[in-house]
Image (tube, rainbow, N blue to C red; front, top):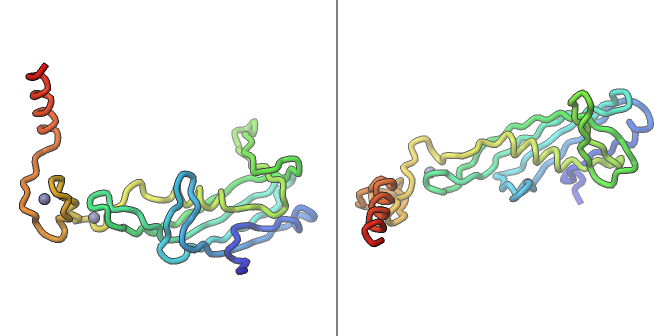
Length: 180
Ligand SMILES: [Zn+2]
Ligand SMILES: [Zn+2]
């Protein structure tokens, strides 16, 4: 098994003695997102450094990759380059079984972790998803799909005259009101 494909960092050494430690790796195929996996074109790469900061640890990292989104006009794949950076304050607490977000009194959020082998997948996927554009275009000049027959208008004109959707909705409403 290729260790670099694990999204984790072992903090045992800096839990024992103050210092800093780093890890890096690759993510293949897709990034596990919150609601749906994010498909990748090629590999995404990530790196993190964790440093002791008194009782706490400062995590700073980055992830770079190309996510395949859907063109908002023609629905064809539209790859988008994503460069994401993240920084979080961590605290080691052997009592917690999973990563827990604790809001500090001063407004600073601290993630409590219970295993010296810290799973980074949450931090990586959260940062990556936040850095993604909300929507994508395959090309600035994409003509989209014909609303009548669904033809890709980038491939040519299908001959349909496009009516504004709002006017047809009003026409339907008018018909409905006539029938009542
Ligand atoms: Zn398009
Ligand atoms: Zn058409």
